[in-house]
Image 1 (cartoon, rainbow, N blue to C red):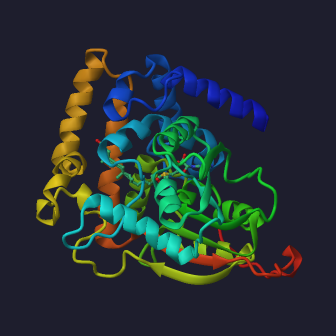
Image 2: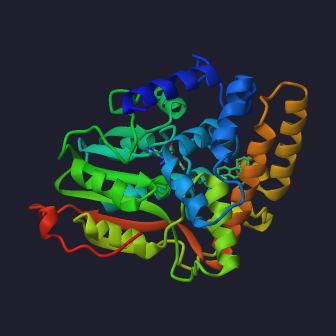
Length: 383
Ligand SMILES: CC(C)=CCC[C@@H](C)[C@H]1CC[C@H]2C3=C(CC[C@]12C)[C@@]1(C)CC[C@H](O)C[C@@H]1CC3
Ligand SMILES: C[S@@+](CC[C@H](N)C(=O)[O-])C[C@H]1O[C@@H](n2cnc3c(N)ncnc32)[C@H](O)[C@@H]1O
């Protein structure tokens, strides 16, 4: 199927699944207005690749199907994410006394600061979700942002929110696969990606596209999801944690941190910062909202969020969605989605506690002023 045909089909499917009036409804009320048979199809398309098999063939299938699989994954989880987490789909570090929203925003500001984003810069947000970080970074720095996303539903939502919050002049959102970008070479002053490029079947693929569209001398900053140095792919316990994360988060393959670092270098980037922000012995761990450890709750106003993200809250949501599905109020397959998200939560907490996994491997990388030609770059073996 050609790129144009795939785009048309995915856009048409989104209209069938979510209707034309995207934006006004969020979370569970948006879930309730989804089309039943389209939802069933989306759940099936997402889960067909995660059938419990971890052999090379199964992995190959997941890598090949990355575009449709992630498109379907976000078609079915976006409403749950907004209901449980908000409109920035990423983790953050927590400090004592800090609210959940402040912590999420600070994590975004920090990336903007490390990327050196200035007023009037043209910035690309790779895998922009519903635009939570783009709105915050545009307000924080005064830059102009283009959000790239392969999910039509999220793009429609991001556009709706930009208009609602009077930010449309500073931002736009476009449909596209980050493995094959349509932008002109040397277009953007800065590029950032927050917990999105882990959906790539090959990190060198997405990083080389970023390198191409970045102006010479421009900076790319990313919070990458990777398995850490402690991870051993041949250890079944470790592999189980990585598989749970892949299954529950729609990721074809979780890569080791070295793979990411080498991929950046192989694309021609000069790596300026390479730091796991989760490896700071923070008093409050990044994954705590998913553990249900109430002792960490910093702010009474955040109680609703912490209930929804905690183990107890997740069981409550699953039970509620099961009943809603039986009564025909929620579309078929919604219960399966909550089960997959439960896997995500369990895998992420296990990965976080054991430090086998981090969602905040910070890389800041520069495209040289005079980029090397690809033939003059010596490449290291990655994936
Ligand atoms: C998938 C990637 C690369 C990043 C997303 C990171 C997080 C924002 C999500 C990872 C697991 C998600 C879960 C929820 C919200 C968003 C995440 C934390 C829920 C709390 C949403 C409400 C459901 O009832 C339970 C979910 C558990 C997992
Ligand atoms: C976990 S969300 C993070 C969203 C956003 N960065 C944020 O922090 O709110 C991952 C995002 O990557 C996008 N994505 C995944 N695969 C993609 C691809 N091949 N091309 C473009 N976007 C993709 C998803 O649609 C989703 O918006």
